[in-house]
Image (cartoon, rainbow, N blue to C red):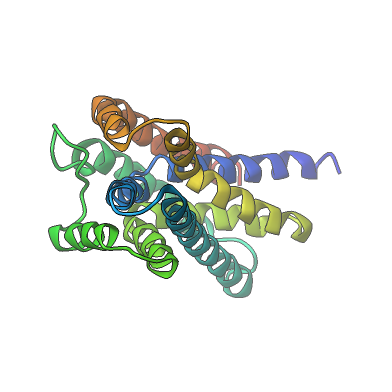
Length: 236
């Protein structure tokens, strides 16, 4: 039992850290702000709350489905764990993504416009502006979560590998925990608006603190990479 405990702690540490890094990404949060801005100007607050709930549910469901699918593939084809070579690649990709976060994640110094191709960003913006029902909001949440995949996929891969190594009774709980951590900023945004903060004030706050969040996100990517190298690669 005591020999298994440190192993479980390492895996839970990777899962938790990967979820926190995922939460630091900004695409789904930016799209939710757009949805708020458009909906509050057209609908009553009750309908806006329903749209926001559907958006968050869509984002959460896609993250949960992708993470669960990766776990299934690892347990089926990789004998419950990725190889040492795969872990080295994951750590290397995390280092590269940290640099991309610092230098390329934001397009403009004065705004929070992200790295997304112009056509994708325009499509998400238009979808947010013209979302009228819960199904559209749900699909928008899934779309924005998918659009962040170039940065979030490796995080889910690292988390899925660690989840696959845990006893079965912990795996479902860890999938749910990762998903909740990843979408926690969306809940915080909803609570802030409910308590009286305006969308404009929140966006101004994001712009003022953009450099901090960029530095923090890149640092978290590096921390996860170092954690994997120290405890999964060097400790193998």
